Amino acid sequence: EYSVGMKNLIFLSAQVVVFCTTLSVVLSFHVRVETTSRQNNVSRTRSAQHVVFANRYNEVSSSPVDNSVSSRIDEAIPFLGKVGRSYADNNNAWEQDVDKLHELLHQTRYHHSTIKKHIFNLPINERTNDGHHHEDGQSLEKYKYEYPFGPTYVRPIAVGQSIDLRQFIDVDSTTEWMSSLQVLSTLFLLSSTVPLSLFTQVVVGGGDTLDLLLRLGLVYLSSGGDAYDEDWIVPLVHLFPLQIPQLPGTRDQHDQVKDMVFMTDLHPNVLSVTSIPSGSDCPYEGAEEGAVMYIGPDSIALVHHLHASLIAFLNNGNLDRPVFRVIDVCCGSGVQALATLGMLDLLRNSRLELAQVDIEAVAVDVNQRALRFTEFNARLNRLEVTTLQSDLLADDAVTSIEEMVGRGESKKFDILLANPPFIPTPNMVSDDAALSLRETNSITNNSQSYGLFSSGGVSGEDCLCAIIQMAPRVLRSDGGLMGIVSEFMNPPLSDSDEQDCVLITKLEQWWGADHDVVASGVLFTNEHPLNSQVYAQRRALTDDSHVVSLWLNHLERNKIYHVSPGLLFVKCESEAGNSNNTTGCKIGSRLVPKTSNGSIWTPHNYNAVECTMKILSDLYHS
Image (cartoon, rainbow, N blue to C red; front, side, top):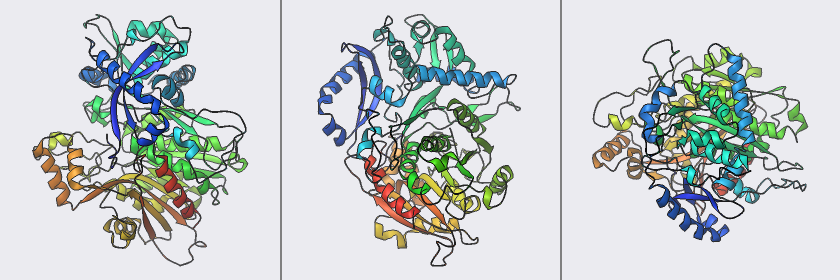
């Protein structure tokens, strides 16, 4: 995981200290805090605490027990196939258990703002019911502590590191939810094991809660044999809390939020594999499925930027039909579709016309495991989504969607969202549905670091091209919106570069002109993209000069000279709005300036969101 173009960021690996009201330390966590000058200016007094964090880190990591999940991954892999599966003999019992998990997370306050404040000791926006209004739709200054919407600043502990909760948790504390929150955050955010005896003693529900997590396949028990000679609870997934604030531009008497939680597979730094053996109920032996992507800077960037501009999109006549439809392509955990449903759910309280509209969501992925995770997350967040297994690179991808939702303009989607695989990985068979690796030379083992959710073919553009080609066939022709987060190869190097930019030409050609759907869009990329040398070094995931050279040669063979993270938004235009009688798609480009807060994907960079929000508002009303 990395963020592009963030030279001013300081990555601080530290133990984050949580203070009780008596100022005694109750817990220390290993966390990567991405600190910028903005954060330093806002909270200068925290510098003394950072020293304490580092000291606590050295103290805790010297524990005689390595309780990282990374050190147990070979033992854990056989259990991973069960994750997300409903109970074969009793689906009602599975639904009831997911509902119980929802209640447990609510009871223990497993919400991002609570975790951010009480676990990681970071600033939050304090909420009041004082009649405050969100009238300013152009400034996000008041939202700055809302970003990021989830704990993207947390890094799981690595092999050889330890968090011994017994040193920090007050087992006699009367604040039951706090002890439970500490244990659950340790398990599902930091990928650290927890002693069985401590879990049953301090977590709400004790043994019953453990049985629930075991039935759902979220944890397993590992026998003793360590320095403490006891059993350990080992997490098999991340539970990522996402807190969506009220949308900018709304008028609401309360600062309402939508608290959500998403189950994903473990971060690649923990999981160490890209394919996972299917469960015992798989119809064919030896089958494997792709891992489901964790929620990283790219995932949350699309959520942030859509959230800021959604009101402007809805105000452009997009609620004048009985059904509002959203489709999430390459859905993974379903975060884009479900987060959008969460935003619309928030708006129901302040938009009467939205309360009268039915909202439907479809999530599409080639990976059956991703679809199971999406269904789990929909149930966990008490939302509804329809899932569809489909290979975007197959000729019948659009047909399979039409067969599910129906044909005709009235069945098309209002919003299409996608976070497709985008890494231009060497030695990939990019037209294979599973993007299989071929063992052709010594880089193969390195390439296996990039699996189904990350490998975008040799050019990185296979899925991006397929999504843009399908968009005019599945989006409403009179105002449908496509939003894609991706890395873009050879982006414009200046705002005046779009006329001669090969990338812009490709995007417009992929949209095509052999249909009646006219569209206009904007591509947002960083002011300072990475050159191929730097990109190769980062993607090689090693300092081995031979491997770096193989990556660099691969980029040069495919004429990839610069790479930038970015966002692409395209809006379909009605015939009435097509005053120039043009055909196809016209895409402009905008470079997002680098600020002290970082660049376009920096999770806490609300300046980047402000930049795109203003431009998207103009796009929606063009």
